[in-house]
Image (tube, rainbow, N blue to C red; front, side, top):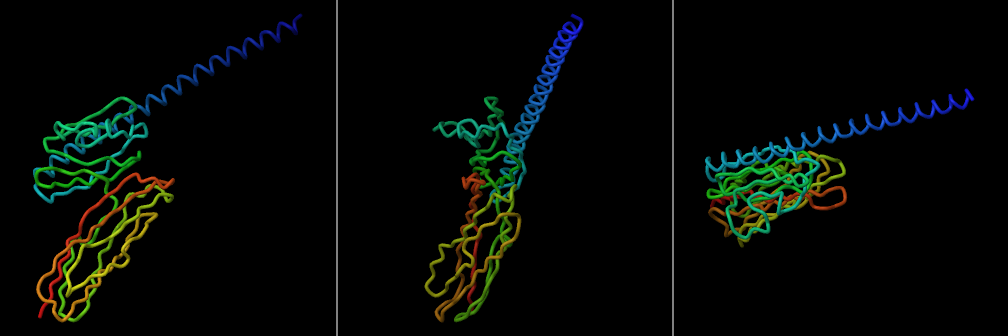
Length: 260
């Protein structure tokens, strides 16, 4: 009888202990989710407010003003072009393009700019580098993946000769060694007496690093004067599965001066 009573008491104690542990686990889990939600909210609010403030700053500085700004896109971000966007939602065909919005699982945080803004967020959570550029009457905001040094090319040479200039591209924002940034460099150069070749014209980077790209100019006997063009640079960031998560395009002015 005593042994049976002891067994019953043991079962009751174990049951109560299990309930207490379950309650503590639930409280801890709720606290964890609460802390993460607060952190996500703070990161998203900081992102929209920072981008809006810096967009207005470069707008006031005028055409060509530019700034690189780091932001954090929370893991709970809903990457929908109708709720997470820069300018205005994709389903809006009219109205002002002056809103920056991030959707956190249904909680939408926004900031408004004085300037007209256009652009998009990268489709990936985490720390992101964003390039903000003034175009005079509007401001563009988008991913920053690669930088060019120098940001313009000037080459002086004589006719019937060749010369080489180098542009060094620094790939940035690769948060994982399994991610990659593909960069292509092209030019619409089309002068009959002066030519330029690009090597390499494309490359892939799996980490932060510099890649030199050579521009080899060749001139004929009829070349003289100043020739201008640009390098069209396109950088695409891909996720581990090969999906494009960010894209950046920009130009590098090129000037060739040929003396007689």
